[in-house]
Image 1: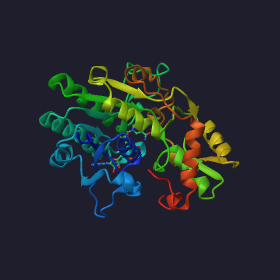
Image 2: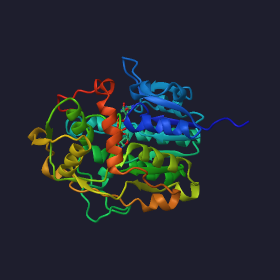
Image 3: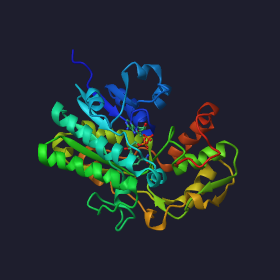
Image 4: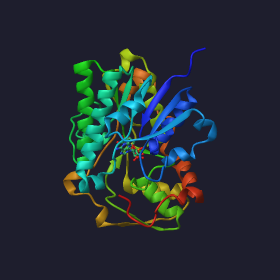
Length: 333
Ligand SMILES: NC(=O)c1ccc[n+]([C@@H]2O[C@H](COP(=O)([O-])OP(=O)(O)OC[C@H]3O[C@@H](n4cnc5c(N)ncnc54)[C@H](O)[C@@H]3O)[C@@H](O)[C@H]2O)c1
């Protein structure tokens, strides 16, 4: 009898990482999941997974900034999914050094461990933010990289290191570049939980930043399947390549708020809060994905419409036990 393949996941306790952990277990993997070391022994969202999922998950506390911690996580893994990152754009204006430490040096530690351990497959996580405001739409992987925030710059730094390890050492790395992802468990730093969370907490006047930018929103279960697709897809199709994951749809933040109001059956007023505005040249005005490369290589396609994803997200935030985990009354950066 062959044992189940072992997947190691960094950032497993976070939003996308916890959904990916569920997706990996559902597809027959054992998962070694890194949650960032902290003094509360908190395993983040992993603590909320069902017992029959957790049976297949080994949780280890660690830190991607520490090479030994990363190596320990990755030893013996058939595939490594590297999601750990600092992700908030506003906080990257305040604490850019920590973004370089985590997103650049942390990625370097993962690549070095993959190289020395001979890890058979490494999935590195990029972001659509590395493209900056779309110069052509939809955005293909050949679109120029234009990093408009320290966050985007640090993620692009990690991407370039990943490319260089493939070119220099043949490290079998594939880069997934998700566009905006949303769903249950997302933090209130992102626009959809910000709106839904405020409404679920009883607010009718929603406080937001710029309403004009457009985004391509992908439901988190579809993003998790995109990770699985590049982690398990044929090596000759995926290794050494970068893949967008997005729906090809586009909606402005203003129209999104109206749609959420419709899904939640609530009339909403929006108040623009200048504290939430990004500096003009740092605001990414338009992102819309061309994911045809991913579809051609792996067959991946999104399985949820925006409305379906929003309905699941609303259901999550309407559960008082879930809502209690959030601070809806403050600006979460
Ligand atoms: N959410 C999106 O819309 C989106 C879009 C594109 C790309 N991404 C990328 O997807 C990945 C996951 O993002 P997310 O939205 O789930 O955010 P998240 O903040 O929920 O997850 C990131 C996780 O990384 C962990 N982490 C941070 N620093 C660490 C360290 N030093 N050592 C170990 N772990 C550390 C955090 O604790 C957190 O759980 C990130 O790489 C992000 O850049 C997210």
